[in-house]
Amino acid sequence: MKSKKPVKGPLKTPDMAVNIAGVRFKNPVLTASGTFGYGLEFAHLMDLNSIGGIVVKGLSMKPIMGNPPPRIYETASGMLNAIGWQNIGATEFAAKKLPALRNYDTNIIVNIVGFELSDYVEVARFLNDCPGISALELNISCPNVKKGGFHFNKDPRDAFKVTAAAKKASSRLPLWVKLSPNVTDVREFAQACQEAGADAISAVNTLVGMAIDVEKRRPALRFITGGLSGPAIKPVALRMVYEICRAVQIPVIGVGGIARLDDALEFLIAGASAVQVGTANFYKPDASERIALQLQEYCRSRRIESIREIIGSLRTYE
Ligand SMILES: Cc1cc2nc3c(=O)[nH]c(=O)nc-3n(C[C@H](O)[C@H](O)[C@H](O)COP(=O)(O)O)c2cc1C
Image 1 (cartoon, rainbow, N blue to C red):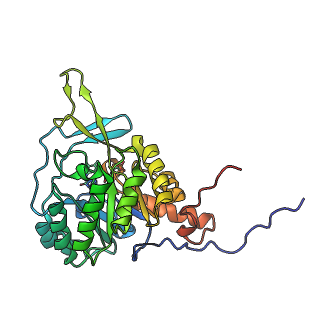
Image 2 (image 1 turned 30 degrees about the vertical axis):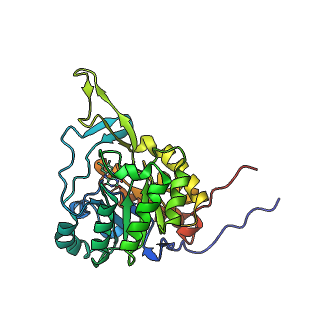
Image 3 (image 1 turned 90 degrees about the vertical axis):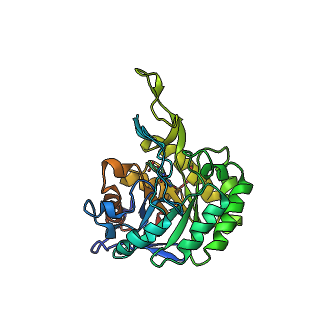
């Protein structure tokens, strides 16, 4: 029997870059909105230059206080949150955070929230003129507000309308739309957003959940329900990313329970062009940097020349 020829020569540094809607990312590891502040808070905990991008906390035009506490609760393999869009507002972000963020060699993606369609449009139009932003991410999937947000992710026609309006308002920047897992068929929403002009889909946001403090016999969160995130949701997020990748032609960014190298690999193999690390940042603040480095070493040690060889490489059974 012929033995396989061993591959010779030194191991080469792989090309980790990906392109999403015309924007180059030095590697496919990003941080997820709401779990990494405005990025700058993590500058002393990890090297912000080591990752492909930072998706900042969802911004409205004016500052929002968010929901009253308790609004975070730990569950088995996950976390429930009902923060409710607390943010400093787009104007303050542009004046105080963006100039400092521009000093880092990474892409800044701004997540946008809105109660009404016109809110999304206003923020998108404002940010379109701010230098230093690589893309916008429309959050139509937040379950922790009484009005807006997730309401645009209940009917694909509403998802279409808000995407089309935001795209028109921010023609200079690629528009990503972030979808909810709390739907029957996520593909319908992804297709509606693609038709409306979305340049990429981020999937997914948190799953609606609930916990009860049995001593007090009260909901663990004042908002009663919250968004479940963390390792507990990974199989659901992965399944949805897999489905979306087969339903649309635009790039898909995977998010949901990614905490380790293998998690990121699963999403990339399923077809995601990039991944976002979320809840893991709370207990491992440099999780994204570690995953980016490990991903590079994974490719190098296996003589994979480009990370793009991994994307969508899922094999089927005979
Ligand atoms: C505390 C917290 C705040 C969040 N805020 C936002 C937000 O402002 N905009 C958004 O699109 N997603 C937000 N998310 C959702 C995350 O970006 C991510 O989609 C979700 O947590 C699933 O990923 P993970 O399991 O890796 O955390 C938030 C999640 C958490 C835990």
